[in-house]
Length: 222
Image (cartoon, rainbow, N blue to C red; front, side):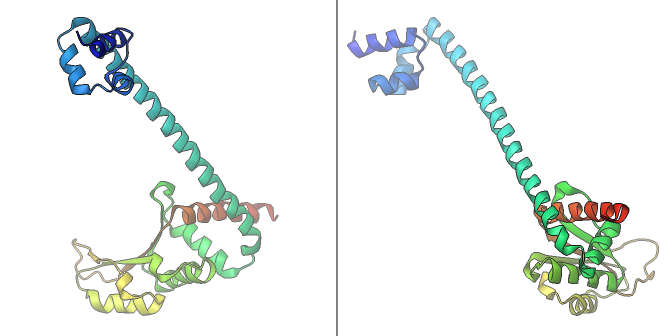
């Protein structure tokens, strides 16, 4: 019998995997598989090693998930802490307060989707919110998207041009409009309904924290 095979058998009996034997003796895994194929004690060992690897992998995944969760929890907390620090300077800005109140009343509150979104048919409301985004939070146009919800008797092009001019957002930043299909094809909202989106979990964390802080400020006066 080859001496390296004897050594391989010895290592295998000790519970070593093919990978370990390959590293120690330089014998290919395919050769090892041929040697130990059908050997009952080796097959039993293989099953135990496989089960151990699966359990180890499962434990690693759990630890990775926990570490990832802790990482993101810290990040979210940092966002909220930034909002707290910034609030003392921003709370005296009327446009900041206007934007917060509009979002409190009309904005998307689902934190997990990471979308800062407000939807309304009132052009002035949408304009003020866009001013809040651009002038207070310094969000550039390429980070903002808009979408229109239109009744069938409204034409897409003119409505987009109206909203584009009003909120000073290029038409290229408007997504495909959606038409309302129902029993009232001529139930007109003059310019449709406009949704403004900014995809930023950090910004949403801050806006919701600022809203909470301002409510506390109004109630306590501090």
